[in-house]
Length: 167
Image (tube, rainbow, N blue to C red; front, side, top):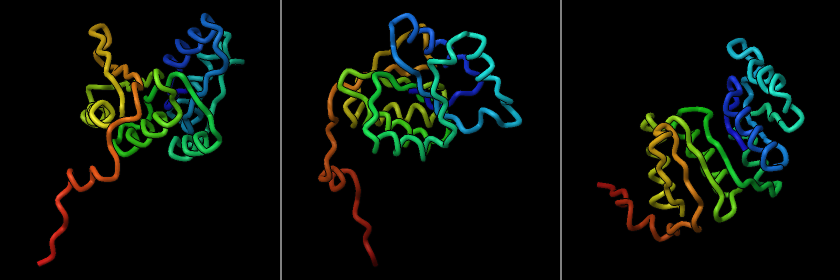
């Protein structure tokens, strides 16, 4: 699963990996592929790669597509998040990807130079049962493995937040 399609470079690499490993389809979520800016460049690149038949392009915002995919019981072994670079969007994308990954599944966050991405990475590792596998050759990527269910429960709210006091 890939959130963000753009020019299709990551998509083409992931499709080649599917081809080599015998993987099934690759799902890419991006409603802006046919926008004036991208003009279908990602689809053109995937078509030229000869792997368009392995691609399922979801033309919706991720905040609509991911909850629906989760509700439908979809599962993925690898999720690559490279869509919006706004914190609330990244955490939402990562959250739904987390729900659809099995233990041992991989979550890759792109653009780790951005503070919002680094914050999401930190939350996933410290609270959500992910381990970090830094790769010095790819400092812009966070390669995370879902290693368990995480450690937060409803009582953590009381330990982490000071109650609002009136007066």
